[in-house]
Image (cartoon, rainbow, N blue to C red; front, side):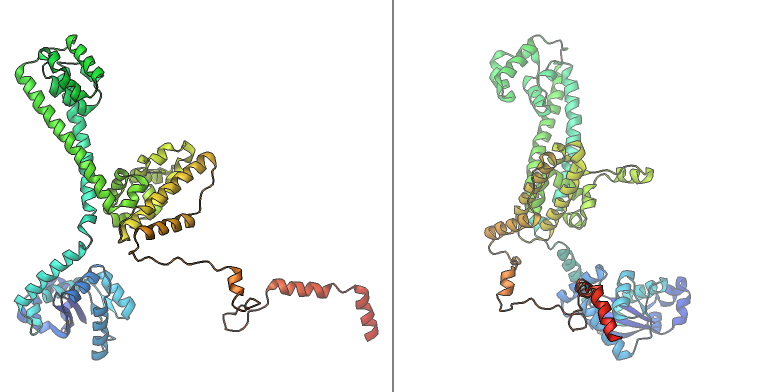
Length: 495
């Protein structure tokens, strides 16, 4: 039996000298836990050292993804050929990687508890089992590989990290909930002193600012009216607030209570202002990370889709049917359990397109919109150049489809719209590398090469194709059209 071991230094192939001890894997660690005992059971058969950090990073990345890298494939092939190991069994820790090795290299692969214990022993005593490998060098290689792997996972531009969008939209939702609770508290608290203000000022943020400006209504004078006009932004509304103060039915308030209300109102105002700054930051971030998705469905709805999927890459991997019901998983599983109607939309319901569509067309437009969102997210995730041209064009397509459902106006073909988008993208980004657009050959172009007749089709065997059935049938019909009288005369002449 053989054991494959991958370390930051390179690939190692070890041979198990005493396979009888593998029958009791629960007691195997006692046999190989110590360095001397491990050398009695395991023997290094082959070792391939990595050429550098880049080579080690490629191997580690392939191993994490469960793929057989070029270096590992070459190493195993040469070892099998050199030591004639075709009939031996290879122990691999990762089942996915073992399946790929078995599939591509036709090697018998095993994964069990004994393989785990053997790999554990090799990892602990690597420097003793591999000649010429020092512990200090191995530690340095491990640290360097860890840093390289971390940088590889964050290889995208820092401006295009979608984690910031996920955190920002989550914080925005939390702030909305907290602000609603806090404003209701301010309304109830200050409403005890000035209850009429709720009907005059309906906006939450503005209510807190007016409460902070008015303070004690009994002490508010006409000289402070310009200050109130500046806060409210409307002179008529400020005068209405002034009149309500003079005839208010509210209770008097003590100075200590007023101080607490002012402090709390100031905190609510600062939270509301921070919420607006966070919203602007989210819009700016979405235009950088997912410009096409933002142009198509809006920044907030696009950010919610990314948050629910976990990342922009995960959203790009989802099919359109999953994007359509993303956020309505509970309703979907409930419908499947009760055999009811499945939901037509999830988070994309908050898009303006579905709100504008009639009830009978909501399902159809949501399906079409989910399809476009899936395409837009893939463009944003895998395209190196940042552009929102495709998102704008797809938004126009959704608008046309909405008009088609409502008014019956015909829509443009998707091929033409995408070709137009590609032309605009090439004009805006002349340095970007894009595939050339293929021109369709006309019939005149085909015959202009000096061929008066089209080429005969070839059969799979290389010869000429068989005569079509329609031609055979036509020939048969011509033969059958001979009059019966002539056939009888021919028979008599023969007799």
